Length: 86
Image 1 (cartoon, rainbow, N blue to C red):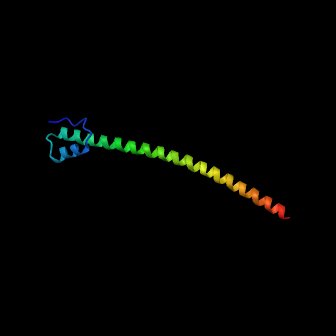
Image 2: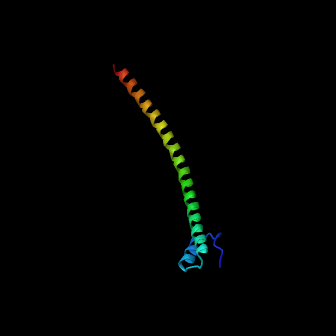
Image 3: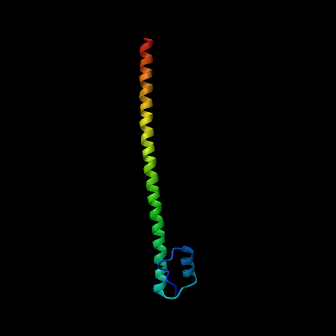
């Protein structure tokens, strides 16, 4: 009987369940290993999404700062233009 508690290939694990590896405890070991691998994959994906979200938030913040400064500059130019016409 193979020890699947350290297996990292999900296909091998799924095949072991599909071929009916004997023993309920052994089957539960395979299922728990699959769950562990999926949780690790999910955690990695969440971490990567969090990092990407933080980068995007920083870029949007600075874009808002730049747009605000451009808007204030346009307002100042418009007021100066109105004052010169009168």
